[in-house]
Amino acid sequence: MTTENCIFCKIISGEIPATLVAESTHAIAFNDIAPKQPVHVLVVPREHHSNVAELAFENPEALIDLVQLGSRVASELSTGSFRFTFNTGEAAGQTVFHAHGHITSRTPKN
Ligand code: AMP
Ligand code: ZN
Image (tube, rainbow, N blue to C red; front, side):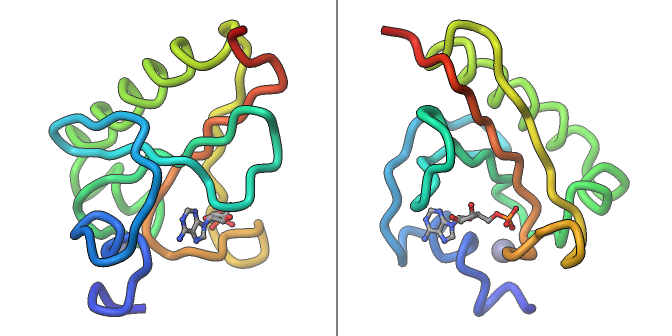
């Protein structure tokens, strides 16, 4: 998939709407459109990289920033117990080929 027809690039550019939760220098966080847990937020680098492994090698600073953003969102929205998942590759369940982490939690704050 190219950057031009990437759904997450379109969310980052504002072409497609999303419910923004937080943002940082290198990443944005928005609600997953089909939440699988009471807390389900996607944390996405502003730059297009196919998966988290490519992001790690091509822009490690952006990956650190993304993990910090995800951790901040998780501590704001959950009691502090959460999963931070990066599906990598089709056989592992990756459906959007723009790197992203899922923050999921069964224990929302309040
Ligand atoms: P993955 O299967 O790990 O690639 O995760 C892709 C995630 O993106 C899924 O959980 C989808 O529900 C979510 N998703 C797809 N399109 C959108 C969208 N337009 N806005 C928010 N989340 C989306
Ligand atoms: Zn993209």
